[in-house]
Image 1 (cartoon, rainbow over the protein chains, first blue to last red):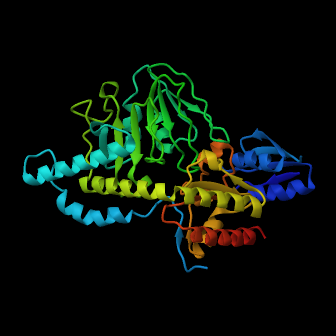
Image 2 (image 1 turned 135 degrees about the horizontal axis):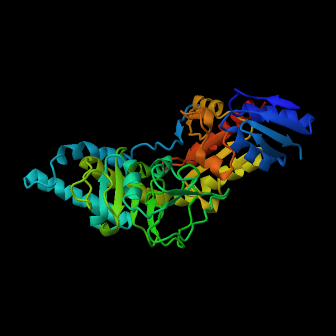
Image 3 (image 1 turned 90 degrees about the vertical axis):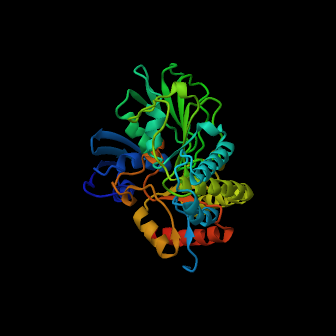
Amino acid sequence: MELDCRGMRCPIPIIKLAQAIKVHPEVILMSDDPATEPDLVAWSRMTGHQFNKLSESTYLVQKK
Amino acid sequence: MGSITAHFQSESPLHPAARAFLADAFDRGWADPTKIHEDSRQAAHLQNEAKEIFAARLGLKNDQVEFLADPAIGFHLGISGLITTDSTLFHAATDRSEVFAVAEGLSAKRLATSITGAIHYPKGGSDDVLAWQSANGETGIITAHPDEFIGRIFVDATASGDLIALPERWNTALWNSRSWQGPAGLGVFAVKDRSAWRNPLPHVDAARLNTGYSLPLAMASAIALEAFAREYQERQFALTAMNAQIREFLINEFNDVDIAGSLDSTLPHLLSFSFLYIDAQMLVSELDRRGFSIDSGSACNSSNMEPSHVLAAMGLLTHGNVRLNLHPQITEDDVASFLIALKEVVTELRA
């Protein structure tokens, strides 16, 4: 599924992502908040989910 | 709650010993210490006294001690003053932003910092310069000595004060009076060997500093340093115990909390941790409403809306961040009340 969080500030994109990943095995996250990328690194480490950066503000997130 | 105000922010209150001295110092210390009047002689005496205190506490010789009215200029003096045309500047991704600003105009390489705060220093060349931070002011993580680096070393001791000794090899070093509860507006700068340093500011004599500073502030800062060092030593065991108690509470009472460093790798009075899915701005204001003032490195709490570059560089969570500074005056009761409030607020915000 696609999750468009552009224009939203931290920690909203990560909160929405955590809700989405509960029900979807893969989420395309779009977020232009400067905290999203470092927080995806920490969130992946803490939760075990994986992510890949697809472009400047798009990330592919996969459930563990 | 709310009856006490526990102040865990980095802007530590001026030490009472320094405050008591300041009024008197402003009366006594205004004359120019380089002139030959009686007042000037008194001022020169005060200046020497202050230099002796800093030299003894910071591991310097008296003639290596310089005072700066603006501690931030010390990054430029300390780093640019060691740079030659063949130099590369090495600095860590967790260094202060003042270091990044100085690096902008130079041939520079940024070194990665691991999640534990470890930095791999290169050997470098003899003309190369390393900006080495003895401890990080946000996470409190103490940095290993850069023994393998063979070039020149600028020591950023602005967070560690007198708590961490200078490495065996160093060329320039900078301290901030605020780190020992001294007055703001005073930096202590040292050059080990003047022949290896050149004043990067407009100057008449390349080996001398001609920046002004307030002598009363320097003396008050020296008094604060003496008092702070004594109290810190007395309170060190208690501070370490409080830090351990907070860490244990965080691990036992909360899910998804990211703590920077370990008890062994950090200065006992500094602690940084982040709560997943928590908005730091709401956390800060809810704690403030309950009488607790804290700092945060989260984007929503910063003036430029950027997250802390230190947390980001280490791969630590940048949102929901709390930074505590356990001043020597903070008591076990303050910490106990703070932890109760923290539990309430985080539980409410996550509900």
